[in-house]
Length: 310
Length: 317
Figure 1 (cartoon, each protein chain N blue to C red):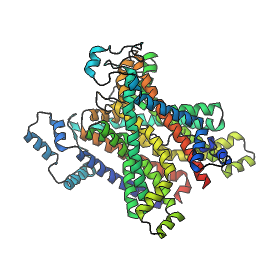
Figure 2: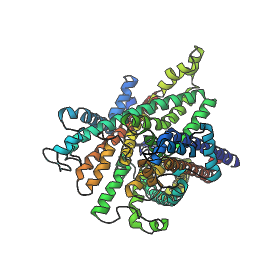
Figure 3: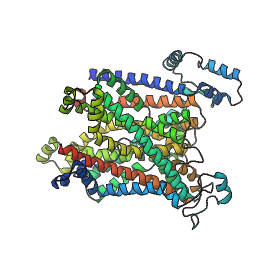
Figure 4: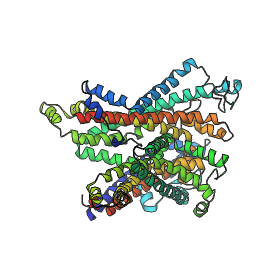
């Protein structure tokens, strides 16, 4: 989890953009898209993400299962039943259908992943851009604050916040979002430092544009590549962090569930051979995280094309 | 060098003070009455709660509470009192720290021993089948939740094959853990898995970069054998950034130890933390968080100093 930089395909592995530049024509967006599509892993990743999102959010409309009524599940369905035609992936210890449960838990894992990454990105971008652009005291203060937060191991901070505020979907989104903005803040600050001395920023100044306008309209849009790439990895990290919290017992409260909590419960039964209670869910987590990493890496290469063209 | 050291120490002291302030604020975010209820039980009378609040200085203005908190930490090394264990937080943590250090130390050594050769292998065989396989495995290693890996290791190698114990040695002595490899091999492997993927990727790119340097071309031009160029010239320089990487990864390793210790019931500080979390033992939770943060700051400081010692370019920059 949140282990340093993700294992990425270094630029040397993938000659980014070389071919795309030869096939001239088309706007910047088209070029970016072209490099992205050329990367087969990225297309596979994007397709996987689309599939898993549809599976979790649209799946339940075609595959009806009871996932909220614990009483009913306990009374009407067998617990820990092995996969059969009635229960394609078996049932869990309460009698909830596992296939339906993966959709239901996946909704929450994905929701938390997207929303927490969104909060972390917006917060990080604002702090980073303001810090880098205004410099001086503001910068020193904000960056020391970032230093302090970064020195507390993320999982410790998350656990403390989850215990203080009692986990619910909304709280978990906020807690993960408010602890994950440090990396984008540093990245965007770094880019802002080099952007703020560029001619176009001076031009806005000469034309009378204020600090707020420069940051929001000119600096941030120019860091969009970094922002999008980082946001992609943030989603993957947030899903893993939620899973870790779920495992410790600080995930979403019952009867709601998330992939991490599902595995945490399932391992108790997997010990006695009920493989279906952990493997499908585990595969779902690994697939979705790998998919986001593929997409993030490809986006990085694609945006490098844009930088080369400048 | 002296100037660099003074600057670096000053920065570390500032961050330590920041951590003290942060942990204080976190501990006060938890409502005082809830803390009293957690400690005294649901049937505590209002008078008992008022007493508890007085004993813990919750009735004082916030800045005075902070002053007392600072005095306790810097003056007496006192981190609070755990009502669940009926023991001072400090004594609980002191008991667990050596065990967590053993776990983190062994797994970091193991990660380096595995990742450095892997990285070199990937450079030597770059864009060949070995490189692709290792890249694929590191992707999956990164995407696998640490607890899932730990549980699968238990399932496969302990319950199915019976090679190792399914939990860490349950002993009070750190020596007792060290002398029972059947108990610590799985936890150590499981914790190092988080870092092996990152380390070997880093090693690969760091070696690639070192191989493009002028001194490599010079060495080759002088007729040095490929193996000598690789190990004597490239590897030595490529290893330097690993020190920084170790410092940067430290928070992830310390945090990862929480998961590993919980999975394997390993009696260290991470397990103490999850126990504190599930029992709403806020003083203990804040205490372990504080210690983990200070350990991280120290680790980073040591890494930066080592870096400056090893690489003169940093000192004079």
